[in-house]
Image 1 (cartoon, rainbow, N blue to C red):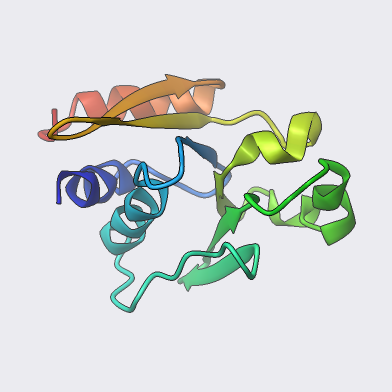
Image 2: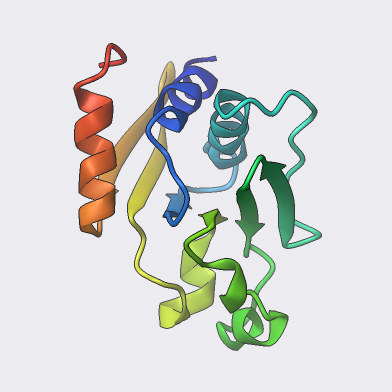
Length: 146
């Protein structure tokens, strides 16, 4: 539940043009965090894991939200061959599970969440890679959610 709530809280500071990486072992809660973010943005339906489709697409007004899962990639070139480069643009938020599977071909993450199982729940480490990510983190920290 806390992972969903955290996702909903962080969603309030997200905006178009961001690239977000989710790191963690299988079962750590990456898709749960993505579900919380999407619900925080107002998506009310079921959020499916994109493991088999590689990407699930959500549309909010003029914002596209792309939820990627590259777990099944065996070689980073598969990202390039899939034609995903155009999805990473100023009109979208791209959230990527298993970004390391795409190697260095992905853009720099604005925000990166590393999720670890820490009994009795989860711990989430937040890192920023760009000024846009820094601004989001500052805005979130200054909100009522911290």
